[in-house]
Image: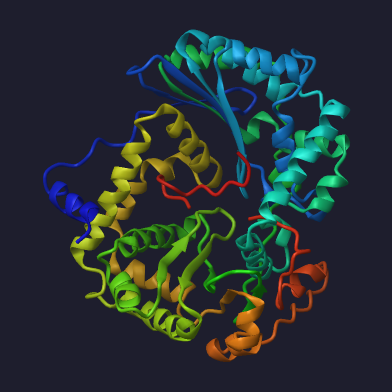
Length: 501
């Protein structure tokens, strides 16, 4: 038994941890949600704002531009005429700051001392409400963002992850690609930035989260005053509804050739979304991930300790409101790769066996999640980020009830999740191999297709009234070479997958 598992087993019967933090909530007249979690243990405060934005809102012509917009946040606005003034003011306030772009969230945050709280609130308001999008600063930041793309393209796993994502969400690939492409960034305009601002940077699509040494009443009064002039906008998801990702039509293989020393394989399925009718499956997905990630789990013993695989990450589900992917990542020497894949596929049906996941393991997994959630509250800056993540992809209620829901998850719900999303369902097998492995070990596309019963990929014909799939999505079936363009979990512990920080 691992030390963590032993600790959980010893602590679980003794006492439950403190419940979720007390969070005060208010909705301003313009629709802005304000959340406050007081923590007076240290004279620090974090001011964070987040929007339901990111690649989920991006058709091809806006691909990656939520990410570019994030970079432009730290620039000139109506109160500070240039970036130098912005940086000088940030230093004067002693700010630690950053921002991230995700598939379903964009967020910005400042941490400072309590004495600078009011000034930090004004600083945030000015940056959000009145960006200037100075043309010279825009051109400089375009270079920075394309530099991020360059850095990603130096990593073989960039191409691997991108090619798999393109196949998984073949009809609307840009909706799962926060980084975007070099082409989209280079052709971006200030007018497109204003389009994003007008659609998504409206108060009724955002949440202002304040954590730390503050008073909730004082925060509500200040936010009401500061944001009184920020007008409510149209609901962006009424005028521009999210796309519906069609299911995978059949099992297929994505082969990516890169100069790697050892092969890697991922098995990928469409998982649940955080919507009312699928909530039970979201808890089941996380619970079995916690159980099977333990070094003492049957999954690890059967696949890794047995020598079948060098590494075998358990089924991991990425929390999303719009189709969260499930993936299993495997590693093995080239000569053992087939056996590793077959062993993993044979292991998955065992998840429904009552003896495979013991009562103690399920209880410890829920307690593990509770420990993670409690640890996040040690730092108010970490808590603010988790609150905005859960607010954007699900709801505050989902976050607050998360641990209790895990504890109540039944074996029937686990079996339903496995049956609904994994067993017998079409998947994408992604294989990352070197050209030498293809030539010398015959680890080519046909080999993997035969191994898992995959069919050659042909994008389904669009139904009447639907746009045709982009050719790039169909082309991802063979090998992603160096000209590929695109990017690169989260429980209340680690469910965030950002591309920019």
